[in-house]
Image (cartoon, rainbow, N blue to C red; front, side, top):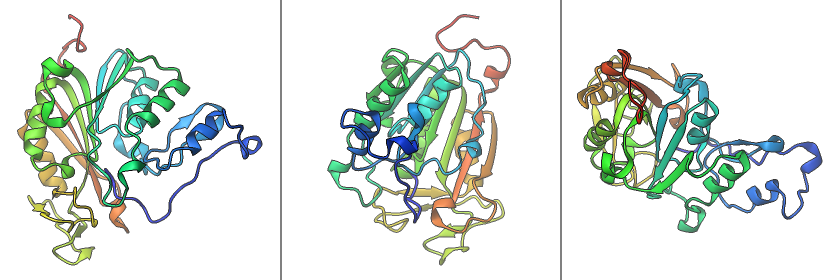
Length: 277
């Protein structure tokens, strides 16, 4: 997941709910010690996370009507719920709860409790919005089926085997893969930190055996954007496009890149996963 910006956010509630009743939605949100995502909920409530920094930067289509979507590393569920809001017919969210951002206590992560609270508040059913504790290395068609769209946000640099993960994702994805990751274009801990990276389309990925990147021991690999795009292409996504979160980032949290990979068969009339043409 994304490194935390220096300024944290607080629970947003309407002015008349600043002292919520014990059984209110706002009170239930406040009870959780940590939120990663900022999720808009009914009644003007927004959960007190910080991610995503810029939802528009992910370039997810405005409409995902009728599509089956997989959200890998779902945390509180922002992108799972967003896919449903954009018309997805079914979402499967998976997480293995191995990421503690280098600083969280184990009790700070409440597994699926925050996800379930938001799902219930937003009115999505369990069959429509499934969630499963599953490692990326357990991903298979037998386990989860096939998907038209896969989200892999804040995932690859936390993995010891990112190329294996992309191969496994490719086996269950029939259409488009959206990846968001830390990138090296503007930052490298081995080259001097901020403004000392690998700009200009260099094919580079760094390895962190300890906590060299962001003081987080769960960060293993970070690629340049150019490298990330070709990693996705090598996994069987014929058409790839990459872009940065910020043209000139000013903090580690902004040193992020995106890649969209598309299997060209999906662009020539293939039916949504689970349907027939």
